[in-house]
Amino acid sequence: MLLYGSAAYWGGGTPFMSRGSIRKNWPGILALWLIATTVQAQTDVLVSRYDSGRTGQNLSETSLSVQNVGSGSFGKLYSYPLDGVTYAQPLVKASLTIPGKGTYNVVFLATEHGSVYALDADSATPIWHRSFINPAAGLTTRATSSTLEDIIPEVSITSTPVIDPVGGTLYVVAETVQTGQSAYYWLHALDLTSTPPPAPSARAWCSSTASSTSASAPTATTGPGWAGWPATTARRCSS
Image (cartoon, rainbow, N blue to C red; front, side):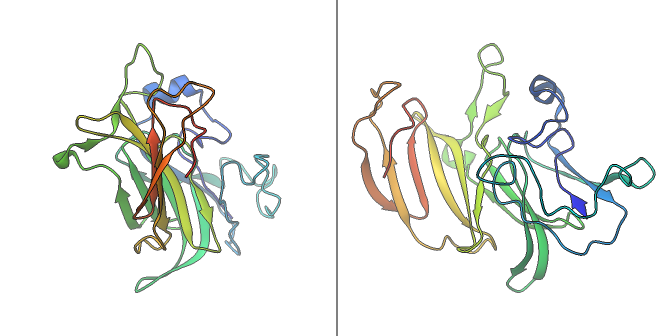
């Protein structure tokens, strides 16, 4: 049975290193570990810490135990370079059919450089990569200050995405900055197979003068699978 996680920790999950150590030392490389037993079935990891209760429990685990997880049979399987720091927990969808490519156990990763990766969890072969920035067009991540924030040098996707297995959609919030504008959070809907989003959704934002406890009524328009609001206002806005 495979155990999925970043080399340092699962952002939003159980840390293997302190957050400060990750901030200073994490090179943006995913590592997966393998217990040397036959892989018979994979357990989907669709939200942070396994379930809506954030229990961190995998109650479907049947292979890993104190007896068989040791230096002789359990260790690093491979690594894969990412384009930025990762604080979001990797998510897993087993037996996912990718049109024209086949069926894979897929691990999804998100970075502070505004990227989402889908990799074959059994070999680290890339399946698709989506980026929410376009520096040439003035769309970037938000640069951070080492004296004021503990995630440096940039932020974009910090929270763990969530997967809707019925709709085949991954939802992820990315913070980006368009030249001449404030930083905004955008809620993106990605097809798990990297085809276009399943349907347009609403874009919403709140007044930049909103207080920390309230927000003005949002304005909504249609958009290609995303929603957005200013990074400087309250999070109570809705479409």
